[in-house]
Image (cartoon, rainbow, N blue to C red; front, side, top):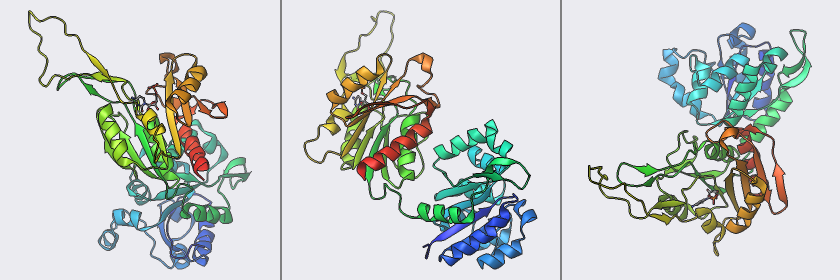
Length: 398
Ligand code: C5P
């Protein structure tokens, strides 16, 4: 049941738009309030009058409708609902969402929202199977967008295959699932991410090539499952995900302090590429090169091993501690040894040899090492690695 729930329904311009009329009725039967938004093309398929009559609400259509802005700005409109549903989600709307375009009311609401978004794609089979749409699907699922359908079947255009919008009962079920608390609701997870910068002097530092992409994707995926995420990140090159608590640090020691401050947690995911060593005593002023000066030598000290510390906590240890192992050879053997050396529950291991393009790239090929052994996952987008891992974490904590 959906009583007390508020759904913002964006109706895209496709033949399946007629099903959204029934969708509105079914949602209202379950007690939901439905605020409808129609794209220009949607109005060619169903009339705003029918949508307004069935929803019992004003239909929002135009970004530049000043009356609407005075009554309710588009930012407020995008946030007032509990869930945003796009049905039908056309190839065009999905492409806009994937690239962050905001050139009409629907796409602007989708970019401005801080709520979960569920889409019901509907398009011709060729359009669905096109590489561009498939890329957009991967991007959108990486962004935490929820999907329902499409189904296989006969289409209005006479072709057969995937692309048919999910049937209304299926969409209603997906809306119910999305509005129920996710499997990670009430769970606190700490995710470390990105590289650390270890200062040599006030302007120089030692760093590594970690982009923070995998850690950010994991935090986003955990948050999409309802987790409360503390995202502790070094100076990464990708932005942190929305909807998580972001704690920015520079050095390994700062990261360690931030982790201690964020504890207790149900799970700890150490995806950061923490520098193993720091400069023992960084210079307090910039080291100068003079004609007579010798080449400086740097003296190193060992950094705290954050993962090993969290895994070894005698009291208050997170129930699940997950580490990463970036290896360049003998991945499984080294990672298995690392799992026992660090005392963590799981190790997500990958081969970061430059030839794999994984470091800083969009894809990852990992082996999950658990107490049961090694599980090789096929090469997939980092976002997909993240959602699979988040699902496994949710199962482990259930
Ligand atoms: O020992 P190694 O750096 O290969 O281990 C990698 C794993 O340990 C990662 O999960 C990383 O976040 C974590 N780590 C850590 N603190 C360190 C070094 C590594 O938490 N000082």
